[in-house]
Image (cartoon, helix red, strand yellow):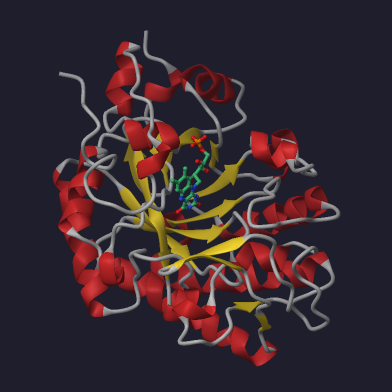
Length: 357
Ligand SMILES: Cc1cc2nc3c(=O)[nH]c(=O)nc-3n(C[C@H](O)[C@H](O)[C@H](O)COP(=O)(O)O)c2cc1C
């Protein structure tokens, strides 16, 4: 019998052969921020996923906050990504690019000594991963109101570059405590202009970015990632359900390819997350929903069977199992991921996880 996960699903104009999505996974293996041949092998190995979402990809130099992350703001980077999209397409896969601006989750070491930017000048707890090791986060500079259209333009240009690089669509990264999430959450956004305060104002930046990206791609090839329950990168919100239900109701009008929700993770619960129920989000949103966060095959089947999601993204399982689709099909044992090789390095822990014979 065919399981739900192994049945086709339409996402925008694409009929995907299964509902198993490779989650976006930062691997920090792009020296000088340029995608490499090794990355092409890594993504090609995973092309049987219904959809691959690329690792988070900075849209501008200001959007960078980790070493060796591949970017999408210049021609060399576009040329590097082109080899990757070609390698995935040769194997009949589909790949979206995740558009990223880290905001305050950065360090002056990435910006010639200048401060990272944020909605408000609030220092996140924790350390930045710099090219010279871990360093405490600094107090970021609050963006001026008149700087925001320039960042929206950076998203539009990066989306255009992704089109030139041969992607099938883009995912706007508005999750996990990065710039767009920082604007959504009242713990990080204390602005008093039209981008802070009310739900409408805090959602404004993301909605403007969405409109800009949609002009390039058409809504049916644009997804958005949100983490309503996330505490990662020092995110807090006094009433996240109000914020995210409002946002989803606003996003309904676009007819997007999908919305991608990161569920409350164990760590979020431990950090006292004000967890938002998936049920409330499903009710608020009319379109295709991908969920992610600690799913195994059984839970993924269940969430689809219950009609709570249309597809499920897998993160750590995809790091360790390039042929995850085939393994699920056969109920084959899974390789264990090795956290020591998640970030940076070479093919070890990257392209050398064994496939089924
Ligand atoms: C090594 C690693 C890198 C990640 N990089 C990204 C990223 O670039 N963008 C993003 O939205 N989430 C990122 N995440 C979060 C995953 O996409 C996913 O939401 C998380 O791992 C939970 O799913 P899982 O339990 O299936 O691994 C990353 C997670 C890991 C473990």
